Image 1: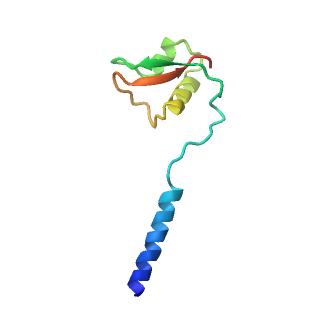
Image 2: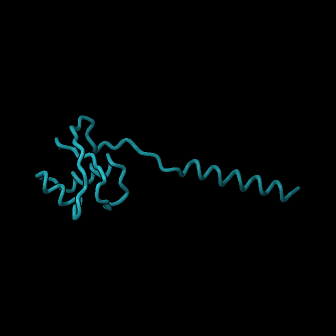
Image 3: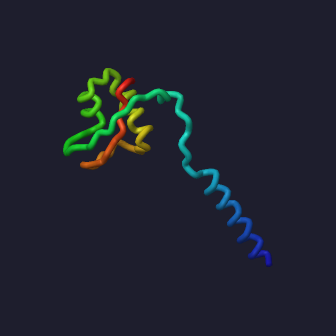
Amino acid sequence: MKLKIKFIVILYILSTFMIIGTKTPLNDSNVPYNLTTIEYKIKNGDTLWTIATQFNHKNYEKFIYIVKNINNLEDSTLLVDQILILPTNI
């Protein structure tokens, strides 16, 4: 009986951590709400930095930050033929 209670308590604690620890997108005040965007198809050799320079964005770091946010990218890895949403008015 004690073993069953311990198991239930541990299961409850783990479930709670899983629910609380789930990654949820936050409202990021650094990403403007009035973005005008385009779709861009990744070509061989593209990086977020080269795309930023190609579209003449003066603040490359902000551009990359916003691109990663609106496309839910955890890192800067891009795949050929991947479609990215790019801001045009930052």
